[in-house]
Amino acid sequence: MRRTLAVDCHLTFLRPSAYAAEPVPFQLVLAAPAGSRIANLAFAHLDLHLNDGRPPVRVSHREDAPTSTSVGHVGSAQERGARLRWSEGETRVLTGTVSVDRELELTVRRRACSCTSLAS
Image (cartoon, rainbow, N blue to C red):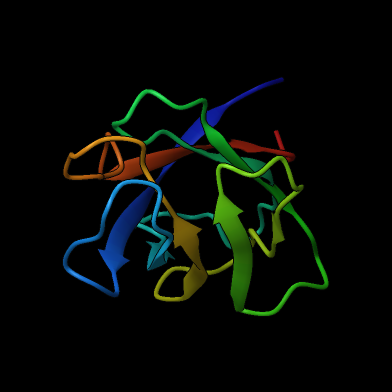
């Protein structure tokens, strides 16, 4: 059975602006919402939908990944893995770089990122 749960998602860029096609470092902090019971769930993947029209950025669950994980350059075809299991009050930090092809303020479309759980 496929279920979708919400995770708080906060995106921060480490530079306030950049030219088109210039890689900008970012930090994405994921936290379990207050009152959630996700401690026993491992998510199969996390899809991040940015507001610039690109396909969702997929990060797959890797049990052996550390709390903070580099996902490389967003926009490349590489596979991305991170530990997508945590308890209320814990956070996961994903870092990497991103670039855009035109001037815009890049954001995650929603403050909550959807994840598909492995558990039912």
